[in-house]
Length: 146
Length: 81
Image (cartoon, rainbow over all chains, first blue to last red):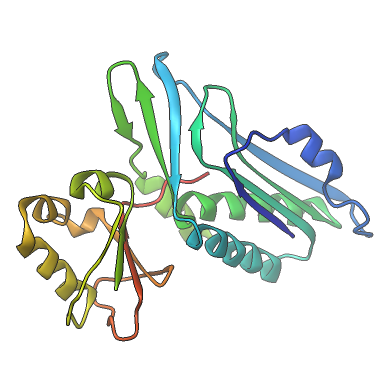
């Protein structure tokens, strides 16, 4: 299991190529990469704030829960903070398992929980304004399906 | 205890963290003490349904006791991922 919280850019392809090396019985690798969107066409950057210390602990707790629910050979979570440009990767998760059902489900679970239970806050910065992104009820509701 | 603020809570209060001397029994009591201080605290804590709290870096709730707690953090609902 690897959890990284960083301001630096990462290369999702390179990360995936190194992921789960030497882990043995793996028949499936699933990954998700979240990217900075420019929904209105005027985004200058996205600023991500986090709670150092709690962030790492919260992510590890979420990963441990995923490992209890599914038989996972390996898990990777990378989440960035600081100023991010449009199109830049924000975060990624990767899961490795013997079969795809566990790898897909665990990646989906990790994403739902990282969205609402890892202490990150997004702020959109345009030429006109700085706006904190509001949490969606749908994101909280998504946790109920697990 | 150390009280930390994040995102718009930090911006509204105007500082990222502070040391608070308090006899507050629960998080709710601490919020009431902070709100009584100044308008900026009163505004930041006016709607607690828009806030979350962590005690010693674990998500908690507003009725939770503060005995033994060293770090309290207030922030809006998280928007990771």
